[in-house]
Amino acid sequence: MDEEFRSLAHRLADEAGKSAEYRRLLATEDDEELAGVLVERERPLWAREIAAYRLGCGGDRRAFETLVLLLNHRDPERCVSAAHALARLGDPRTPRAAAALATNSLRTAYALHPVLLLTELRAPESVPALVSTLRRLLGPDEVHWRVALACVEGLGRLGDVQARPVLEAALPHPRLGSAAEQALRRLPAD
Image (tube, rainbow, N blue to C red):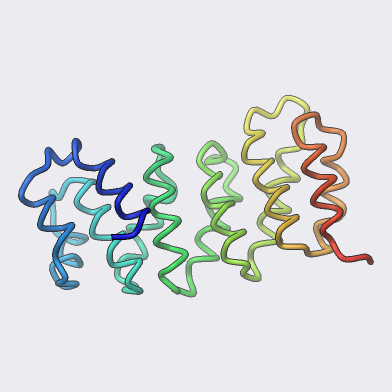
């Protein structure tokens, strides 16, 4: 059991009431049983999360839809687990889904983990999505500055010169300026 799986199991133990089903889903090696949890009616969210996480980390693409829903959940811990599994899933749809979640202006409050996932994936969709999201979050009274900061840091790690204009625009922002300066230093010279 890796550290992320141990954390997920610990977090969901109380929610699941440490039930026999909870213990079985943590221990089973039967991917068909796990996949069944994703489609059966009236399964609790904790059971779907365990099944999707385990299948996703194992590269089983049947977990994709559930993991994307969890990536956009209001509970940040569910988002962390979903992002971890999606990064290991290897599904070619993942970057597009993460980009759609990161750039959705109606869901900005939940965009942090899609932004972090895009940075980790280093996919062709990553830089355009982070640039678009950051550009939208550069207003003076922006309340989602943590998402903007994740975009700035991600663009620095990705090191793509396309990010230069939006990173320069972030320099005057008190919460973003220092990170934008560091990110700009990481970009190759034009």
